[in-house]
Image 1 (cartoon, rainbow, N blue to C red):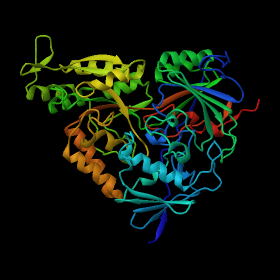
Image 2 (image 1 turned 90 degrees about the horizontal axis):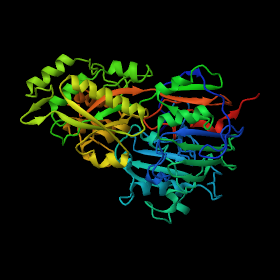
Image 3 (image 1 turned 135 degrees about the vertical axis):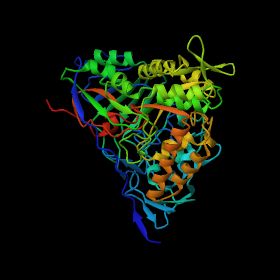
Image 4 (image 1 turned 180 degrees about the horizontal axis):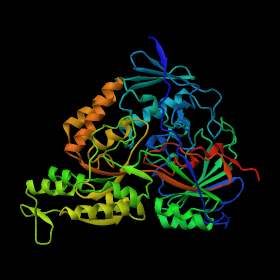
Length: 533
């Protein structure tokens, strides 16, 4: 069959860099930020850390893992480019076979050679039923993966899956190490070895991840010799440590990032993103599971004010998982703020205000809790704003904070201020978030949303290679979310980072929900160079 070459997916252009500032960076020494300010090191503050560093369990699945490489990677414009593959794949005319020729001479950081067997091992292990990888459904299209000698790999698909090449940014693990261990609990999950530009030197959980440059990296040894990610969950603490010079850079919410405006020793980077904040409306709760309540809440929230006040304008209103500026957005699904209509919907559905203004129906009061993660000021602000807007419609929302360990057991029946979003392809986020078959599967479909029309559209979207069919499918999803929300989407957020202005090279990409770890201005830290004085 005639072969064609994948050209990759064009993302939005990198966001503009805004000059801002803070106190000059110093090196206090010690603590999570030891090395901050050193000419050949960088210490950045992130809000979250992975549960595992094994790509077999999902680490780095969207690229930029630093320890590992995928067959492909993304460039600054989010187009696919070769990494462990020497070129973009050749794809059969029927879209069912992808062939990757592998880069020669690549070695893992322990000195062992990389080859086709490692690629086959990685994908087959992830797809194994015994592997605890919550994202394995993302590789559902794969029927088989085989080695063609040691220098090529062939993927055979069950059905044409338009964004398959995007899935091959997934990091490759070494069979000679990971293959001899328990995939779910072996040493490789915390002491990984890869082909990437950096080597993990230490991981103090809850504190920091430390890396050193890989001197034998196939792309050339990085100029930043030491790279540390300090795990600082509290936004205010992260800002304080950045200001004191303990950090060279950090991800910050808008209200804290603006506090660094004016000092030329730092720069603020604004990254466009598909990252949204939404409220889960659990199907199994007597209030949030009611369609009328969902419809009312969806138009009772004042999204424009949230963007203006909570995001300081660094974002846009969200009406679903797809931002309004995306070609995948379904025109006409915007929802205007309409408190009067929200009240009418509730009245007609039998939710009648009581003496205290809180509605009730058949003895059930319109009351439910809303959880957000402790220390996340942006989620807290969204939760409080949502609760305030809901109260005006006669629905009482009580906000609660806790760790994910506290929140996860409650997700079945209690609302959560959640987030998501992927710029690579609409399938990547929507299938996991809205597919009823994944209801209650960890953090997939947290609301346990059930909609047969959405389920069908999600399958149509992922199983067709025809752009028109795919656009129609994802339009259907977005229109169905207007009829029966399941989630109230609030805002799409621009990610803000403040970084010491002493390197050439920092930039941003269009980012997914997960940020600060694999994304941020340090997405390409291996190519940074110290500025010449």
